[in-house]
Amino acid sequence: MQFLTEQQLGNVLQRNFVLGEVPGVVWIPRSGPAPLVLIGHPGGLSTMHPRLLARAQHLANDGFASAALELPGCGERPRIAAADEARAELRRAVRAGEPVGEDVLERLVLPLVDQAAPEWQHAVDVLLQLPGITGPVGYAGGLIALGVRLAVVEPRIEAAVLFAGSYVPRGMFAEAKTVAIPLQVLLQWDDEGNDRQLALDLFDALGSGEKSLHANMGGHTGVPPFAVDDGARFFARHLQAG
Image (cartoon, rainbow, N blue to C red; front, side, top):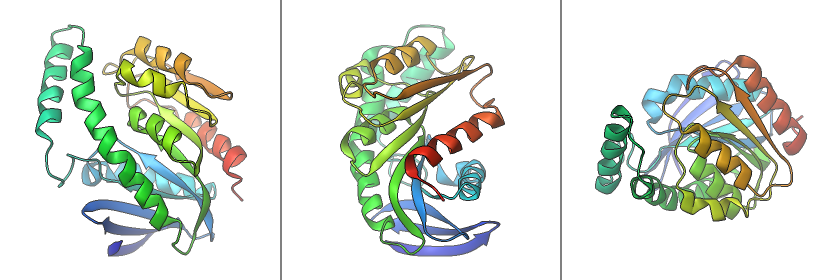
């Protein structure tokens, strides 16, 4: 891990880094050693930075460090031609009000998840060695398919808050049935870019013995502030934040 910049931003020390060729950001709270929450996002660390920083500062107020990686094919990372073609097909179908083919979702989501999951696991290896960060580890946000995959393959993740605002191929539902950690799933009921029924079907498929669905009225960016507070209480219970 090579650190590029370091800046105190309110209650967090923000450190930009590259891990191999993967850009990332870690936010460490002033309060001292803290459990780590991985912040999922749809890609584009630079454009997403204001929202990611706000989430990191909120997590720091509740006693958590946090980190995010750039997704494959996003930001300054090399483009993935097959994923770009599938994304264009998806947008055409949505604009035309047509159903999105399962093959399109698989070509868009599965290669990204297959590449991103081991990158995030490697990041956890390194981040847990940094001063100011301890285990256990949580995951919060989207891409929900990546959150599902990490919940299955990464044993250090002990709880997850999943944002149901992105597509999940039904081929991953068998994988979802093997998820065993506590989950909280956040669903915006009127999310214009999300298939609500698909999100409900995924929630039903998730195999966790403890899972809850938090559905709120409003579009993709209309998440109410109290939903963030609910997620903080969830992590406080399961990650034992101070």
